[in-house]
Image (cartoon, rainbow, N blue to C red):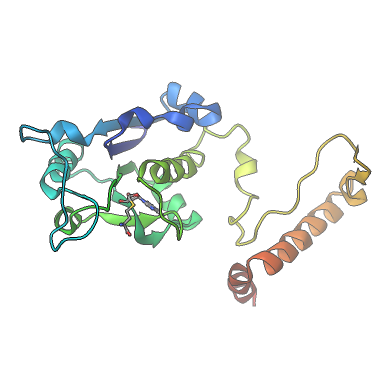
Length: 233
Ligand code: SAH
């Protein structure tokens, strides 16, 4: 069974979107992973096919109904489905590469995308949805957040990335941001590629890259650097 992402959304036409491009898209066509976007509105039962209503207690905007979303979840992920049930949400735990690794190593994910002011709290509790955030800012819907999560997972699935090694040295896998990369031409607007990188001395190249990764992390992400430093002590 290949890794499978089920997405619940009011805008299924947004998928696969960029997930259908490049290496992820090729892997999708080859069946190395599967993607199914399901329209939540299909599970509306009233005359107007409504999926949202005004917030209890008043206030602006609309809230997605618990019953409609619950039916959608039960249809695509019946009891016993081993996949985590995620809800994209600015209130969720921030997505990290560690979490992505965990999701990618499992059988797949169910991802619910919110719209409007958010989702009735009762379905979050009743279906034990795990809220995941992609950052401290507010999007207008969960679709772009779901794509970010799925893209990060899919590139870790064996056979998706062309060169398996390029997935192991990059930002976060070592706890550090990635070192600067260069390619031809040798001279660009007066700027040369650092000498060490064309020296052919693999030991010196590795040392330079590690030093640069440490420097960049120290300068840009003191929070990550502190964790890295403590891990090495
Ligand atoms: N009123 C809500 C925001 C709703 S935004 C609040 O203040 O918490 C509408 C939908 O966009 C959300 O239900 C969620 O699915 C998605 N969304 C917005 N920002 C997000 C983020 N940073 N990470 C993940 N999903 C997000």
